[in-house]
Length: 566
Image 1 (spheres, helix red, strand yellow):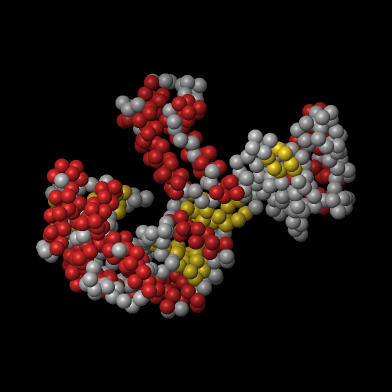
Image 2: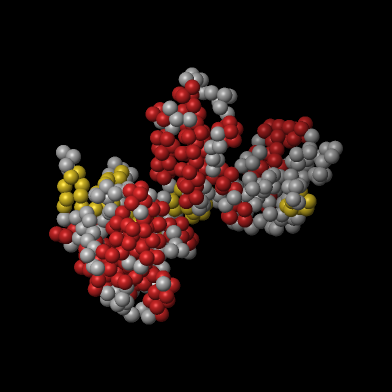
């Protein structure tokens, strides 16, 4: 059914579906909607009914009674229970929890309506859509930044779900739906009262949505579809009115988060965005909206920080993504809460069972860009907190590292380590991140035993205006310090970026290496570089005879056997 509806909506963009209400109370659709709600494991609504109560009563009989109400058009939605969840910065976000009965009906409506509206949603919207995720939105922004759209309008809407006007929203739905029973069901759902507790703990019901004709409770199954449908107006208005071409600005939207990537026109794009939001009766959160110029500045989007990063191998700067420090601190706060003293009556295995899904879920989302430093910091903090919890539980005064070492926490108790997961990411395997010691050297081949079998000569490194110190060894003049790191292993060693010990093969005798380092310390850096040629004499069993200063014709093929690329 969903495939047929989507195909029809895609083939006929102006077609209005006039007979959809009878699909809502189909037995298979209601049964699947109940399974979806059951899998989400939500809390009870204002009636206090739980899934256990429904299963004790009988799921088939309960769904049959609900289908009969829909068929006879006597169904009436109940009030929404209002709860508040904390937000970063000490604020609170309102969340509306419908009853299980209303949730099943709304999920059935989403199953029927989503294929129709999915065909018309623009590519700029990534939230709550099949085949799209927040990671896709982050990748899109990253791609725009690397193609020259480095001026960014980081926008945020103030109370987006509570500000959607009902009249314009119903017009957006009626553009593709002409079934009056479906439209009436949506209107009743938008005007449901909200039940919350006052300062005295008494339950009070308000009808703010019905009086002001705006807002859809965030937390209901149908709210994501309605929010995408109304945000579509802004995205299409931006493109149809010509702002995308005129401002050279592209939109990436996820729920109430909005990013506009521009080519030098961020201020004009921000002004146009505010004007369009005013016409749509939406409010822009000025405290969180700003213009950012990358790479001089960075910004956060969907938990990631996008801006300047540095390569751990070459030290070169590039525009990349990394986990936001706020999200790292939030995870550390959750780890601290899980290992708090109030859980001392629990076992260590129980704490690990709670920590592991938390860590794995965090790592599954934060898998883009250089995640190694964040993974290592979280691993250290998780071990530190778990070891501290064990100390308090067993009243151990010392740090107890020898009693509960890292191997005990990770192997015996089974605490998850995130660092090995970084080596299994596709980008890490593609760059040869896993193997050692020449893991980053693409010119070294290994067999199945991880034994080196062949080493080929690497290609010439690129020369730059201040390219390589080896280019100036034979000139006799003092080389200038490059403005950025380069890929020449010889120059990295002479500059001190890598120890001089790495320039000589590991099989060279220790006295020869020590004498070379001592000679450099005695002469100084400048005088040591002016010495040409310098040699590392072959030691018994060494794999090469000498390492000399390179001539201009040879300086492109720099290959130091046994030198690990880090």
